[in-house]
Length: 258
Image 1: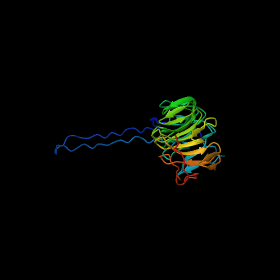
Image 2 (image 1 turned 180 degrees about the vertical axis):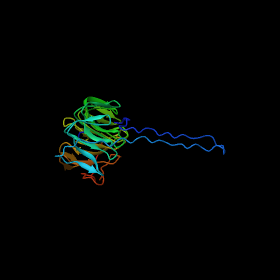
Image 3 (image 1 turned 45 degrees about the vertical axis):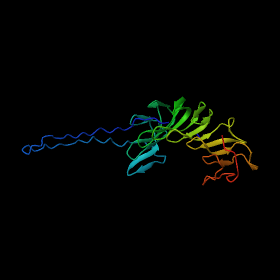
Image 4 (image 1 turned 90 degrees about the vertical axis):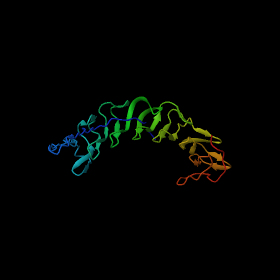
């Protein structure tokens, strides 16, 4: 899994519409007619598509294709020979950046895929150097929630958020309030929980362990569990069936995870 919350500027900014009003309520003076002028709609972007490659067309508009030339969509220049995708209103959805581009401090590097929400807020981009965001320092690809909080990344440095400790090189995920939900730890740094070690850990918002994917064969209350077994717990730390998951030893007594 390679995998912040930053308010980001819109790529397409509509002009404000201002309507005038008349304060003269005299019956002898008819109110002048006021016309609110709407801004001219920006033309839908035209993509120079490679005709030999598939493309997505809807209502006569090309929404996605491999472009044959560098293509400007708003302020962004997309690289030739790569996919450019648009939303149905013409806003940019995805492309490979021709040049490095910053979004409220996020230094998105050239030559990597960047993606946006329909609101024009940043969804994904990659950074050249480790970048600090949402309380952690990440490398390479960053994925965000629409409200600006970090969603997924690989840690360049160890970090702790609440009770959750995350070593460097972990692949981590957060909810849209910045709480850790999933940590895939590097092989050399499993999480020790009593008599077993976890390669991947899912967390409750409280920071308690929700599930553990075992890194090695283990013995859970007298029951042998092979590496790769998923152990699940409720918010009190007791074994849980965690409906919908393939949990091991849910009905067996176990010590509360630390």
